[in-house]
Length: 127
Image (tube, rainbow, N blue to C red; front, side, top):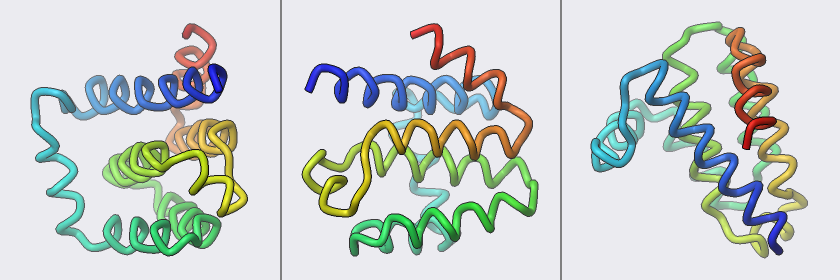
């Protein structure tokens, strides 16, 4: 239980740090406006609906396809996706065959697609 909480906190803080450093988005100060703006695009909304339906692997596959485009703006979608997924209960994740550790590793892998793997690794090791 403690380890799961620790991993959950790592993921949340990594997302916040990257949003702040790369996009000057202060999650606490922006009152989630950045998230609402991303939802208007439709891609994030579709991904989150797929997660809510219990099809996390399917949503992640779509996310990986999105990242192949290499646009830095898609990193916001990645960060929002994993922040949302990280907010799901342990029971929900387990029911979908997922774990917090998998969220952390997949987030790190996708961040690496944008050339930021060292930053993610350093942050996750430092906590």
